[in-house]
Length: 409
Image (tube, rainbow, N blue to C red; front, side, top):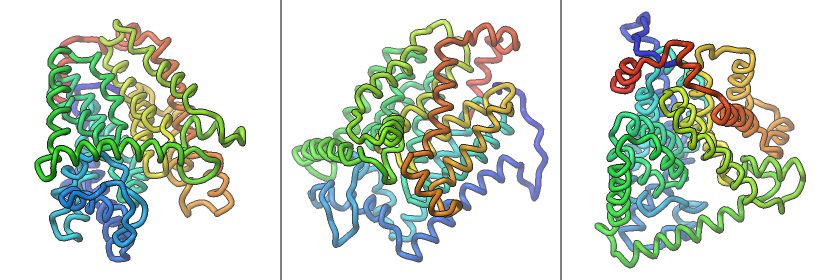
């Protein structure tokens, strides 16, 4: 539901419902911090923190360090600089601020969307379970989702230099935001978009060298891609808590771990790209927002690295799509929202008995609602005439559209 009208909201204890949802997110982040920190089950944050110190010491960022933590770092070398403000603080403070930063980034990004506060409140409420999942695992996925959402809005607002900063930084950290380069087609100044991309790519490539050496950083990037290649091959298996994507679902339903990724990736890329050739539809803000929703979903459901805490990215796309509709609570949408909360959000958790969790895990059922919603989004993006719909609903007024994007965030 796109509108530039302010929603009247009642206050409770001096805060609106929208503001209380912000409080909820910070409360979730705080709870997850204290639960993990005081029980000393904060392995993921230790990995993140040590990346900064390993870079300074010139150590391999992707080796195993069993004396410090289990598992390995999978993030790009620039992450060592991104995590630095949290790493140099005392562990308890840095850890807490890391959790708060994830919540703040996601809240700010959703706040930037050209939706009423009522709709943004609902978006956040329907995403809070997945936010708690990624926060519980101390992951950066809320920030990655925020980068993708914010970069889209910034492109639409003509701030390509900042949009590309988020896209490039996110890509150098975790690859998923690379899909944000599709927003180039929505740019009003494509030359500035390209130049900004080049400049930020150079900046973020060189930045780790300020506390290390050029040769070492170049080697880090080589090690990173080697690590990602190895991890991708290890992800492809039957069962387990990873590979919860389109390809993984196909492998598990067929009982065949040899089913390759490439045909699915080619098909997914083609289906995502076809709507981007419908240039006349770019005049519709609903079309553009639906492309954003599709991008958020595609980044996860076509990744073999998709796991339980990753789905805040995909769920954000699914919920934005549903809630931006003029009639968001249709029987289909209600069903999907329930599935997103119950199956996608809670399915792999202790909310379900073990035999159901095992079934959900083995068949990657967590991904199914997101795949269904993405298929619907893709169909509409390819075949629906958003311009005609806008005319019918009297939402195509140029002044209102420009004002809407100008006021968002």
